[in-house]
Length: 313
Length: 307
Image (spheres, rainbow over the protein chains, first blue to last red):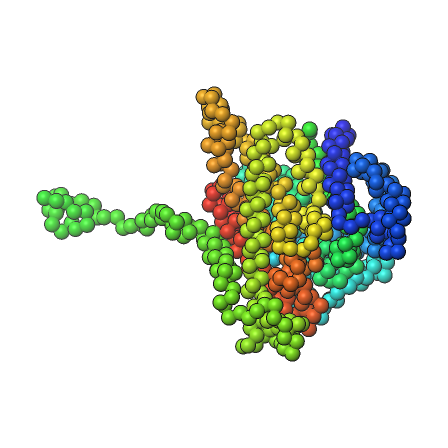
């Protein structure tokens, strides 16, 4: 077990290195000269050259990549061109709304999608199954912002049940925090729910045809125990895999959802950074999200061994 | 004497034969050809027809009662949908109907180009990776790296480097989609290589390029076609998202994402500006997804009955 986890971590390291190299290259080939930007309009060419040397920008690509990686390992993501603040602290300021939104969406998805998929597989071919799958296909085709606007229009503008936009920090109470996040997380979760309901159904259908399910039925086990103890546990590996892969949807979707619902999180920071061409910030966010995504999938791989003891690499 | 099974009247009693059994089962009609395929695969038909209609809308955009989608008319801004302005007018007085109709062109161009480019590039990379062991190690590590950057963020990062143009949007989304396609092709190639007929071809001295062309390539086409439709759907959504957050198609070009981005500030009072492009985008993506799901079921009967 421990050696499996260790090996899995070691496999992840080169992937992270490639991500880092890619993200660094983005900054390296980005248009504009950081030295000239820092020096300002009044600087002479000699000043710019001096700043370039002090930043190490005259060094060869690989040397720059080395020093840059060293800084990343010390959690230094550089300084924003626009605000002159360290990127790390800019991300830290904005991370709470985004993490709240993503965690809530993840929880909502698991609570809704897995039972939907189980029911659809159990009643395969029935009206319920068809209805759930039709919902899944349409939810898969509706872009996040479309769902977001429709939800906000119906539940916030017309019915006035929930706030239209904005975010309240968790420190100001659970209910105000939750109230602002319900609509965004339903909007963000719709695609994810569709994805996981579909994979749960497919995986369950396969397991339900196995001999041991028939045996369980034959010995008179209750339907619920068969579904949730025998079947779901054996169907779990593909489901957990897709939950991990689907986190990419959450990350991408969060950027858009935050724009629709005016949530001051990392998504908004990304959009602002793009409009200002603030490359260090864009780079920092891409790097952070990619590492987060890799980490989630590493955790998913480790979970396999807990769900299915047969898995050994 | 001819014995008819239907009329027993002329048959003498000693030769009586049993009454014809009633037809309990309707005769099975075997449908063949394109029409038969479409009738048997309703999902493909619905998706295909919807998509065809949208393609025609895109091609004939100037003849569908549209005005110049970029013509400003400050005096007529923010009109609600009416007989004159079917979808209303936006904050600059531009006709939303014309903009949405012309926006069809951008979405379909991006979706179809990305699907074609990503599929071709992914096919090439997947084939190389599936056939060359040393290249496989390097290529797959790079693909792992690219795949661990969420596609939308990768496209955003690439768009930040370049000026916004439809071509650059297509390139950025293509790069983000290539890893998934090449992984799929590699997987198919690796499993096909174990097939007896490939062994037979190798044993009879067929050269590798010929094996790829004759035995591998035709078998990758079905899953690739299905994957291409999903890439197309995802590319159209990503294009709209990029434009919506201001990192995609330049604002001068009417694309659905741009129209929504412009309507965003006013959506609480004038929801129709956001509604119409959103509805068109959803229907288009749904059409492509239905086409893909239907083709997957038709090409792989084991997956059928899944809707």
